[in-house]
Image 1 (cartoon, one colour):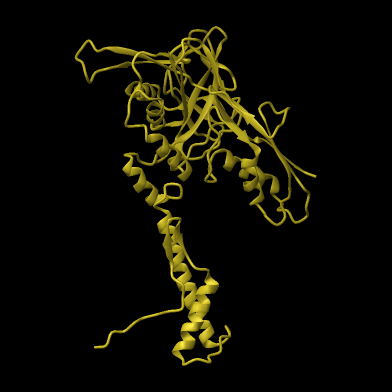
Image 2 (cartoon, one colour):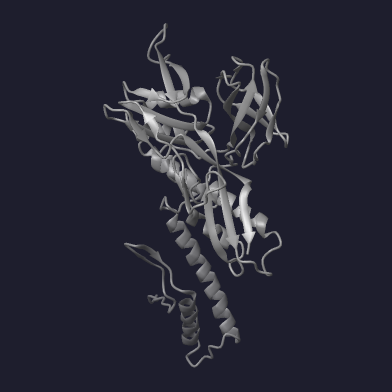
Length: 410
């Protein structure tokens, strides 16, 4: 049987050092028209309204869709673009799993009698009926008020607006009131692509010990933790770090964590802790080494910082336009919140970060690219002085409430 050589004028997918390249669909269409013309002996009409033109267009759509799928699959090998199960598979190489679900975390001010102990897992209720559990044992100081971190027991991006967490669900003698002066940090139903990739990069140091990266990666993996920051002072002098000039003692380790149970956080720090450094922070928990020793077990006091929640304010100025959606204000607020919390695929606002207004233009513009014209987006820490960026200390976690997003049409 004679050997048959199969050929086509349709350009093929190519691979090079820069990755995959797929042909334009117009080139695919011209290739299919040429193939049909050759098959019919030449002189064929190439009008797209003819039967052969319609066949060529259908073939082009099929080939183009196949090429798009191939390009997507190839890009999934790159951690910068991987998503879904392909990203999960890359995570398995680093022995990490996607965090399945997490509840909204909020800092609330609890008031009551001086000396009252509010234990971990104390329960408060918000105005929507959701229950929040406290994450650490706390004692009401001489001021009669103390800030405590609570976490929603229902997972997902459930908003906790300013003032919403206002009811003591299970009474404790001496605890008389609760409210939240700042909005909660939204949880999620499943760890986002961007957050998972961020944690994967940090986890590279996770298998080591005695390194800042190892402590950071281990703390981020704690259930319920929404953010963390780790640094150190390896000098013999006290130094100030970050926007708020946090004081770090000589040769000290500083860990700031928001969310998560105290026992889990302390264990995560202790597992990767360099030997001997002093520790800085406002939260303390004693870890017992019951693995390497018999009773009486050695005890280690682990200290870290629970950050102060700081409200962020946005001011968005748009050109007034009759073609804008009727609910433009709510849409702008939703877009800003989505970007702030990292729900748009970008990085969320983090402890010790600087938030830049430029990060938020794309989300607002995408509401209606033809009719939304942005004059400016500015940011403030106090709702008075607005700038194009806002910085936060390594002891602060930024939070955003929809009511703090001002939208003006001019």
